[in-house]
Length: 168
Image (cartoon, rainbow, N blue to C red):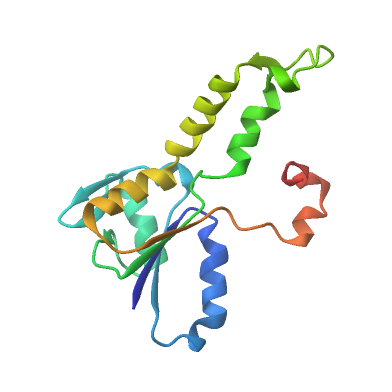
């Protein structure tokens, strides 16, 4: 079974993990396609593949996949990792905004917004993520199952470091 694993920098956790357990699953062939988050939005559908429209994206795909400069549509399944569909992006909105129910006058630096505005903004954050955009493109070229994993949980060493308090 051929599985395409697609993601941004968070893909590294999956790729390193796979190298540790791959011998236990001889019938699985995983190909990793990765590039920094900002570049994962530059794809077009062409000849049954997701083809990069930027050279640096093609170079990154080639480096992470051992030579492939596009994502083929003939994989048996796809796993997507990270790419903006995450709680971190939603929490960034809540850092500065509050609905009436949670608004307190003493929090003068927070912006008051309606429930419908909050839901529309959260929907926009998620639906405009690179992850959702790539899922839509994959569905144009393949009927294979698609699984999604948000950013992997940070290691305990990261969670214990005050430099990374935003994960708390």
